[in-house]
Image (cartoon, rainbow, N blue to C red):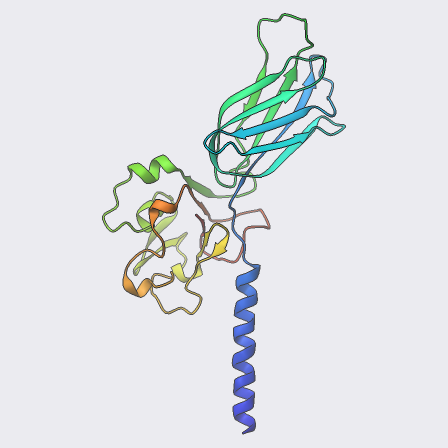
Length: 243
């Protein structure tokens, strides 16, 4: 009787640890914009209004610059196009259009504001690529165009994830950087979607059926991270797949 109770207790603790590890794992589901607003004398402008509008849905993200002229717009929808508008009383409104954001990206922008009434040849807006490669380490982004144009016979997510240079075949699944696919982590909108019980050789839920755990039609972007520096990305030793 004692041995039965001890066995039951041990199994309960293992299941609890598995649930906790799953809940601690995280995935990236959004993008972000950061930047700085300055005047023509290269002085930071505080309290400037910054508004980004997602064209397809009309979703608006707004903030104001801090005392150092910097601003942040976190947790934004991936894709676009976005229209970013910067305004300040007494200055010409500056606008950046057709802005596209990738999954897990933080786009960095610099705006130079011109006083109203002054006529200049041009307004200088400097944009640089976001944080893909800065805080995600080795990573690959697969956008909606690649998903739509890449042939897929089995309509399996592995057909798209093979665009990752570090990918390779392993059984019925896909491995990254030579690591067994059971050590991958798959997130759909930030929720873990792994085969946590290890029943399928593909390492995905219902992998025994030989099909993908979700339809590619619902995915806008894939992001595959191999060696992320960002502490919000974790729960894997092979590759982390954000869908």
